[in-house]
Length: 149
Image 1 (cartoon, rainbow, N blue to C red):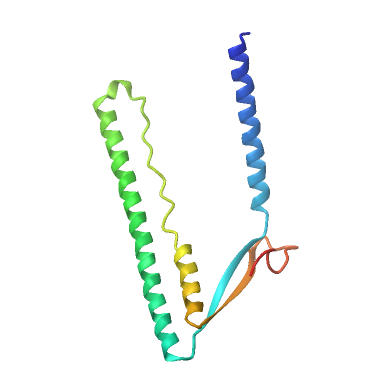
Image 2: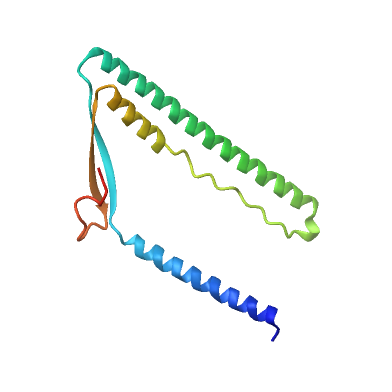
């Protein structure tokens, strides 16, 4: 058995071992408690603070529109790239060895917009209260996760 062949076998075994360990970790984490944080808002009492909060809402809507627009561009680009790949394959039908994949677009991430909104709301004099609770796999789970606000 050549050294090159043996090293490939060892490499394959290491890859299988790493994949197995990764799968076990994913399964174990699937049983961990899942927490969700909800927020309640107490608006500022003065008119200037209320006007400020209105501006925060406007900025939040713009942020969400930007996130959606960026996601739409990602989806359009993925579709365009996939169609181009398929067209190349159609022209070379005899050796159809190229596989076409659609790029993954994770969807809009509104978390950044929500974080900015809460920060803006507080800077306007409003109060933001966080309420963290377990929503699944809650048996023997503490009321709130460590490090939560």
